[in-house]
Length: 160
Image 1: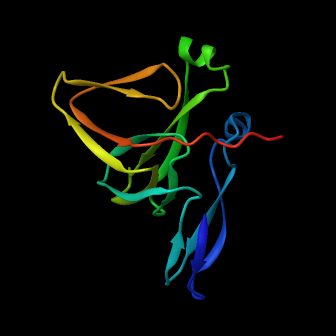
Image 2 (image 1 turned 90 degrees about the horizontal axis):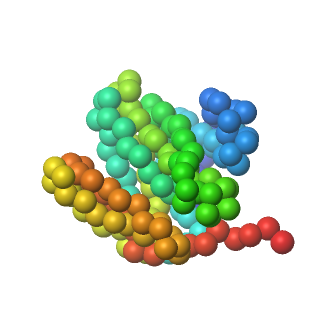
């Protein structure tokens, strides 16, 4: 959520590729885009931490859905639905993984984690099971690599 901006910064809409796929999955077809000199401030409705991840050219990061806040203009954003038995048991609504990449040059992506956010660095073959948010299913991550973990989860409000 954009909180405020400098008068010199312009706000517009940026169309996202894959509009049909995005509409079917409930993802936004347009993103808010700020351009020009100046400053902007953004936040999330919920207590937590905002972290900035620097992506070197050619690097990408996979992120749990609904964590994205903002990114520099050269960061590309895509997503995919995670399929499987756990997804069926969860009502088949889908669990999405967002992927942010910087193929053309360095970039920054800002993410929000509910509660505190910490990083676990896994050595080759080392694993960690992370609870996926209020269910009895575990996501297993195996190294080498880094895993960011939030200390709480938030149930998204349901439409009434």
